[in-house]
Length: 117
Image 1 (cartoon, one colour):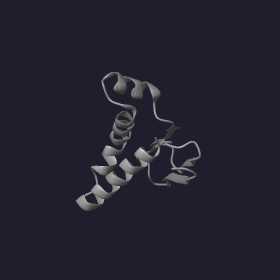
Image 2: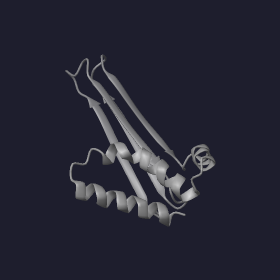
Image 3: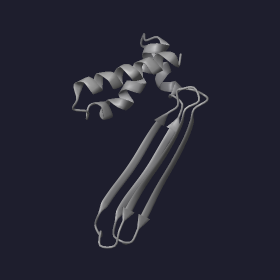
Image 4: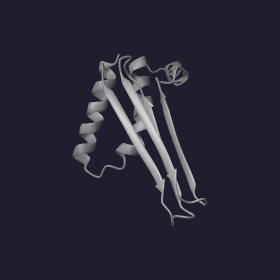
């Protein structure tokens, strides 16, 4: 939010002897404020020829077409934004085994979405 900055440095390193290995790295970023700065630096190294490695970064504002679609189905802008962010974050939240932590993170996300209006 506001003037936040984030740097993500991810490395896939296929060292010698890792022939036949598969590695995937992906990062999806939704910018909720115009002053936010994101830096993503994916790196793939390979000491082997027979590996399957992929890395990708998706960065952007909330998809206006998704928001329009949801709003055409009766949701207001805040509800549509909340649904888009929750859909992107659900796979991460569902992996948290601590229910209290899951609720705390979900509440924090909801608060930030409301603040971004």
